[in-house]
Image (cartoon, rainbow, N blue to C red; front, side):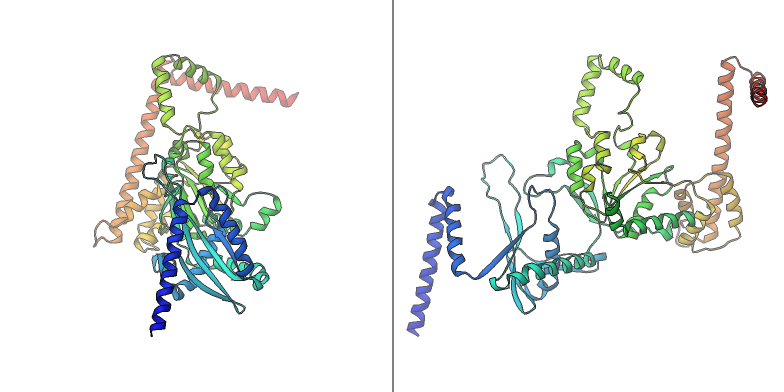
Length: 511
């Protein structure tokens, strides 16, 4: 017993001595020489230490993008870490129905492959900071370290690592919780917690089955999405990045945002809702693009309102007028103050974002613009090749109404449907207005009451359209009277012009 106690006492003294030596080494040994010392220590240990270590960092190079290998390993280790690791961290799983467990920092688990034992360790390096520093600290760096015996080098490097990446990607897809992202202001991009995008769980219930649109048009869009999602090799063959642009245009309330949600749910993609006004310049726009993942939809809603992209190719007359205004010192100061506060993203920068060299970073992406006024957009922004497919979302048709009636009232037929069909042919109403009238306002509300509400709304819209047309006719007549043109003279002028055109065409035929 005395001998055992002496052994433990000696061991404790040795450990304490080593810890004291290490503390003194860090405290007093010049920092410039530590790298040299560590290099020679590792070289010396290489002669007696039979194990090989491979490090996989979360970020590599200039930290532009998170390593796909790191993400795949993280997913792979989550499968067995819950059974073997003692310290775990949890995150929400697919459909918010379960938690996905993974290794906590500075934890180690073992793995086996073809009878070979391997060790995985999760680590991170925390940056050294000084309390009096005015500069933000650099970020902590996470990495995984794989250890194995050197005699298994070929099996691990040629077979095991490929197996880990393949399994990790498959597990990642199964456990993937889809997200809705929004971009943060650039002042939040640096420091200890780098957050270019913030996200919430994407839980929008929209689908093509519940979308108020003609069946033929929905089938056309679905076929286009399926073809795109299965065309990786085809895009590589023709030499184009694996992406596709969609322009959704139409009046407000016609379902543009709902269409985007239906696309995301159909393809199982993440959604990046890009707010252009929060992007400082073209460089930041490229950084945001780099930080997006594959299998995603990048959305810029109301592109005509986001930035003054329509005014960058102005006519000479408009430019001259602006130059005259800028001569006023007050106007010039106001413009300079506004430009310093607003985004400096240009039309050229946005075009490069859509289909320039940087758009090839990653694959399997949809880029979607929405607008209420397509005629306001620069033709270069929406040409084919950038916005490959233009989808017009117009006023509600009777077929669209039938979808909404089934969704909201569970009706496939009703004696009021004929009246509604006739009114829809005579007036315009958006799917949003139809849905609002079909939604029961009370718990005991019946379907017939909702349909009657819709009929009243259609009749009111029809009357408003009639009064508006009448008012526009009065304004037009008043304008002609001010110009000294009577309605009769206007008609005679039209008839004279038509007769001259007929005579001219007859002469051309005879010649």
